[in-house]
Image 1 (cartoon, helix red, strand yellow):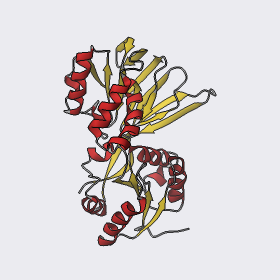
Image 2 (cartoon, rainbow, N blue to C red; image 1 turned 90 degrees about the vertical axis):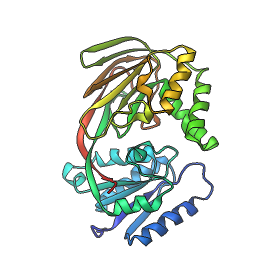
Image 3 (cartoon, rainbow, N blue to C red; image 1 turned 180 degrees about the horizontal axis):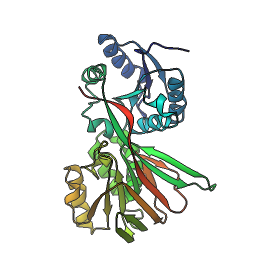
Amino acid sequence: MAVETTTWGVLYCPKTGISNKQKRWDKIAAVLKEYGVVYDMVQSESSDSVERLMTMLINNGYKTIIIVGGDSALNDAVNCLMKVEKDVRDGIALGVIPNGVMNDFARFWEFNEDNIGQTVGWLASRRIRKIDLGCIRYTNKQGEKCHRYFLNCLNIGMTADIMNLRRQTRRLFGSRTLSFISSLFVMLFHRMEYKMKLRINSDVIDRKVMTVCIGSGPGYGQTPNAVPYNGMLDVSVVYHPEMVQLIEGLWLLIAGRFLNHRSVHPFRTTEVFVDEAKHAMVGIDGRLMKTPVGPFRVCIEQEVINFMIPA
């Protein structure tokens, strides 16, 4: 099916846990009409359907694809785009209307979930910037070589567990801060250290580590200086602090001064080799992924996605 090049393909991913999904969409549709946007909308029924619908929009020739969703939906979208030929991908612009449990990548660009009019106005101006993606290359349990891209960050260890809990508690509390605090409290009863061996630039870290964040973007506050367009990855390695330091670290994270904590060791690089991360969970853009088997590598793919940014 051929479509007009000016027609947007809109993939609506309803926020998990809300009762009236149609009401939210009706608000968005009204703003799209106000701006005279011509679009076709498809709605995902679950996270598993996002990749299928995104692939359908790409194959049907849409040149502007808007994800109405959060970080995980965007992650699925960019991984679909990275599967197609470069000349096809280069002809597609990806945009976002924040609608997730967590919208950290959209928030980096100052897209506001509650200001739909401003967001659609910015998208309608079609200002595009080439952005980077992080990539994890690993082996799965079947011995197959795999890879997965990320927009924001990859977490190894305690924070991967926290982000998973945070997604669940955000639905209960609504507040980002309250959900993080409650998640951290639950995590106090979980494993807090993991034996890791990391190679970052000329440094070798071979010791117990609490968490590692590798960010192409701000990394939910853990790589606050990272930007998705400089061809670099920011890395924060956190050793196990004492309880008082742990509480201090939480407030520094909320205040945006995470790197000031004495237990945080920052790096900037183009690749990270993880030779060992025993029993540590791995999260990618806020969602747990299947834990890689054995060593894995995280690298940067420079300027590979056309992303629609504020005017």
